[in-house]
Image 1: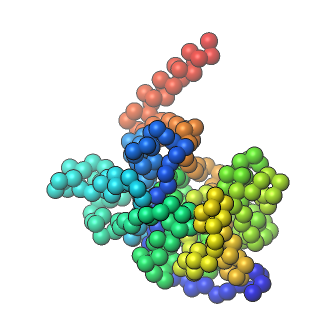
Image 2: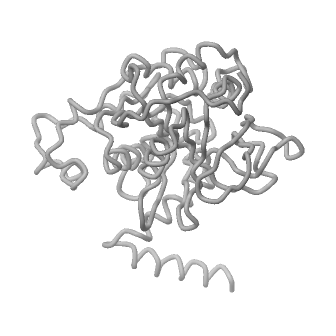
Image 3: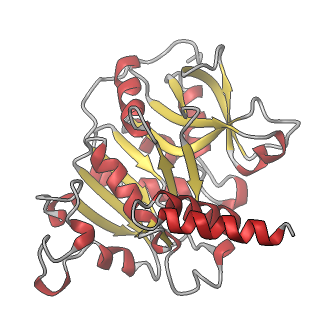
Amino acid sequence: MHASEHRNVQHAPVTKAVIPAAGRGTRLRPATKSQPKEMLPVGRKPTIQYVVEELFTAGLEDIIIITGWYKRAIEDHFDLNHGADLETEPFLSNDVFRGRDLNRHLFYVRQRRQAGLADAVLHGSAFVGKEPFVVALGDTIIYTPQGVPLVKRLIEAHRAIGAAATIAVEPVRPEEVKKYGIVAPKAETEGVFEIVDIIEKPSPQEAPSHFAVASRYVFEAVIFDMIRRIGPGVGGELQLTDAIRLLLREGYPVWCVRLAPDEIRYDIGNFVTYYRAFIDMALRDPEVGPKIGAYLRTVVTTSER
């Protein structure tokens, strides 16, 4: 089927999400030698709590987290400790978690062998069934200071268009395209736009654009069939980018939603981006932010002397 001959896609509600959180975090060692990178604190909360809160806030009802070796701390974090309740668990007493039985809304499965992001997503297939679902990487925080949150915009666009996949993207510098999946837009690239191709970690010369995948997706369940059909890609692993590319070749519509100009994607994947995320979240803390800001101004002033 020609890519322009779009297959029809159902417009079912999106209520489920898959959080891949099985990566080794090698670029953050030794901090991640015995601790999941998703549990590294960013301000007052571990990274993955921001992701879970983002999804619940966007209206998702059930979430499965794909974990792996030495990732038990993620499950422990969302448990109530020794019979404690919401009133004695401060992090669970905010509006996002209040009144929510996490045992009924948070689920876990282990990726026993590291085989790539697409394989991790495939581990959620029994949980998802034939329903549409969100994928949100567990090591990436999306900060939306105002307006409609990114995941909610993704879901709204996905259902309105009838896409098979809807992907969050953001512009990156030419020298950075080799780090990401890069999309090839069909035409205009303002707000919401259709794509005709996607390439995993191209060179600057091969990159079809400067729009990189930004760690949030909405998929129809047909993506699982695509994952089962692809072979190992970049790095010898099953790449989600390759499964999306197969969707396009099979004639399914794939669209993108750009991050808003004031939205920030924090990739907790290396020390530079991790430090930046921690500092930014600390500065936004209503209780200690002003003190941290004053301290940083002192440090900068001293270093410039």
